[in-house]
Image 1 (cartoon, helix red, strand yellow):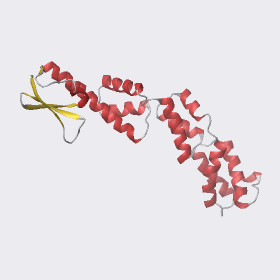
Image 2 (tube, rainbow, N blue to C red; image 1 turned 30 degrees about the vertical axis):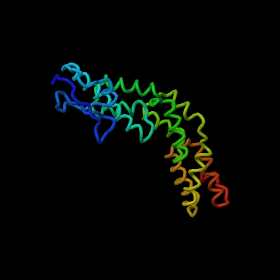
Image 3 (tube, rainbow, N blue to C red; image 1 turned 180 degrees about the vertical axis):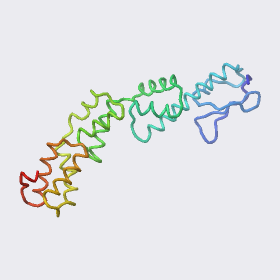
Image 4 (cartoon, rainbow, N blue to C red; image 1 turned 90 degrees about the vertical axis):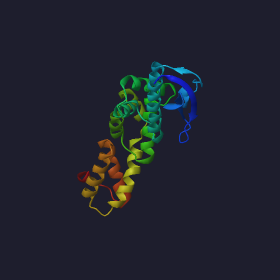
Length: 215
């Protein structure tokens, strides 16, 4: 496989990769970054080629990870799981994780805060549910607690509950309480918050006070 570079040609379909020709024969493709130092007339040994291919494998894994990150931010655990699923070697995973940390693309604190903001804006949940979701993402407990510290459960529960309460308006008080309460509990709101919100929404919806026996 050793030979002399006779041509370096940017690929037509991917301008970020270069075809390397040795002794006028196509030998292998490389990431543009890795091909940049190569020169026509340069002699490559078998060891040189093996190392270039190893580095190219790392770059391919890194590029796949960047594409994975392009859909939404990811926690460190998610990235590691993704790379293991692609059968990437452990030493390469460590290299990629460290590289992503350096450019700020792995930051579990920022991820947790962004996750909570996104959830509260699109599909509000209580702190209990948010904690569970973040722990499943591998976020450290301290970071989880910091991220959920400012969640305003009563306001969020009211926002979510009003939509559901309108659908339950014709139900008797006890059924209204059970269905709305169960719904809010499934969303991770604390029992005390749920109890108060159900009482408030019953009064808003019907104009009646909810009797103690119905709570």
